[in-house]
Image 1 (cartoon, helix red, strand yellow):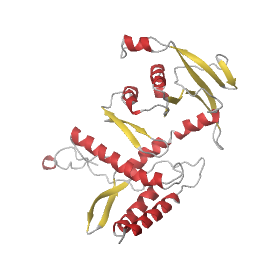
Image 2: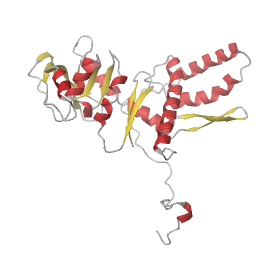
Image 3: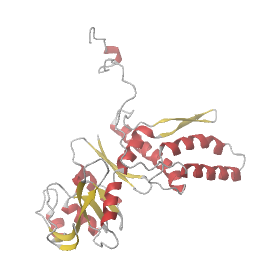
Image 4: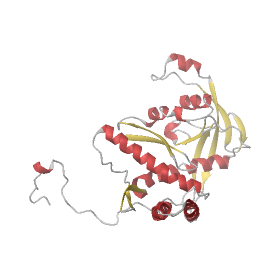
Length: 304
């Protein structure tokens, strides 16, 4: 199953998701999320979504876009209306009608689309300087500078961290026993259900749990870009029993206030250039894979 999610970059809230089978490109799935976008929103995506028709349709809705230039396009900064070095506004002509679009919709789109192309250079000590060409519909260079557009594109990596929180870090309450909270990681990387209908229900529960955990993080008043996710989850599990067992509502409000203060203090230090490659701490045992039902499964002798 393939999932395409829409996240809020400010709070990390999981706004919507589309699922399909594996052999579907991400771009058709994204078009099914257009109704979730509102006027004055800014969509930040990678180069796979740099499509003329999608840019034009989103501009009609009042939605702006910041995307890396697709590898099939070439940027010539000597053309168009130059705004400075490595920055210009250019008119992209309307391509021929694709097979998935009807003639009426194609004819309603404008003949040209004004976009701003920006070349951004990323310099990091110890690494080779890389140049990225960004495309944005934010045409006012005074309001949205080249550095601001490059910063938005760089912050798109936080979406990968949101997904990693869902798969490996997040914990949530599954029930209570004797008045105490029982928590275990959600582990969304391995779904427990079998049927398609139950898989959809499980995804919805993951989405609800993630947004419930993101809400106190956003209420804490801290810098959401710097706040840890595992730290607030542990603090929520620690303080939940204290809040629920408060003798009065005023005492519970004070506990909630202290909880939000501890969440706001759980900031991750600024560590530019730090790399943490994925690795397992313990090697799994060399058992056989359970490829058949248990009552039909037999151990293969001398399998090593």
